[in-house]
Length: 337
Ligand SMILES: NC(=O)c1ccc[n+]([C@@H]2O[C@H](COP(=O)([O-])OP(=O)(O)OC[C@H]3O[C@@H](n4cnc5c(N)ncnc54)[C@H](OP(=O)(O)O)[C@@H]3O)[C@@H](O)[C@H]2O)c1
Image 1 (cartoon, rainbow, N blue to C red):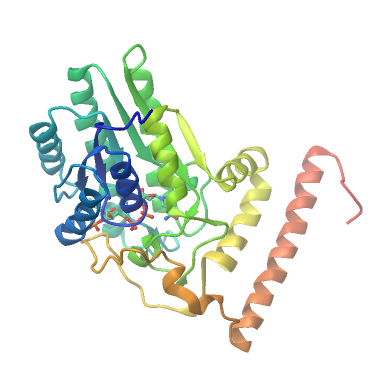
Image 2: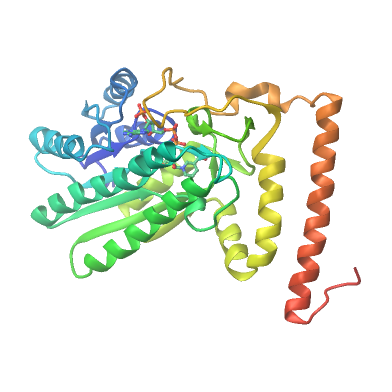
């Protein structure tokens, strides 16, 4: 049985990446879709595809930072379909750079989209769900919402806020027929990293292991059918979160090395605000981050190879130090160092 047939779904961040794939998956299941993002052109393109796939769809250009626009989004859904069964808060931006280097106005912009935007969506959805007596809210969290990492203080803070907001909201919803869920992905192959603000001074890479957006979309649909409190996508978020909680000193040593080696550099790159201030065309339909980056798979030039080798050596030393410290802390030595 197709539980999603005829379900009314509001989806923010629908013009790109995870949102785009999720919209199409809902459409294939004959859901009725209300798609939102800032770029009207990209949104219309996704809506057209969804209609072709059999999902009745409207596109409502919306900036989630503005509460009146989010309320207008909810009203457009009610006006067209009469109710809302599922609301997915997917819209977000990404910002990378050391805390003292990222401009404060961009941090404010990121918080407005990632935190306030999610809050606006949750408030609009839950108000409607209470009137109807049912509904499922799904907010996209992140591994950054449970296991923070270097050079992403603002993004990690924003995703921690999303996770905390949902945890608090769930307590307010006890005894109702309303669900509030978090789907928390790790690194996903989407244009997020092309849209990101980058103040590291070097290029951004996607930290492996990298999962497909389809995997997140499937988790979102499963949550819509059978709501869960928190769903991690892939094994990496759960393992990283456990390491952060159980061995915080090891995690603190290891994670900055991984970021330095795998999330940034070595090529220099200009400092850019990405899509935080406004939407960034074009949104290539099929391209994830990796598809547009065949060159990163080629071996680096010799001077870059040296930098990579140095970073690996530093990581090995940091790992050894971290292991010594954690073994000293618990009074146990796993094997001679
Ligand atoms: N990709 C990853 O590795 C990863 C990992 C963990 C979590 N996530 C989370 O997954 C979600 C989707 O990310 P993605 O990877 O699909 O990124 P993406 O490809 O950059 O898509 C982001 C979407 O959000 C929209 N958006 C951004 N700012 C907005 C605003 N102010 N108002 C309305 N819409 C806005 C964008 O469209 P407009 O610019 O046109 O508005 C776009 O549709 C986000 O919550 C992200 O934090 C991603």
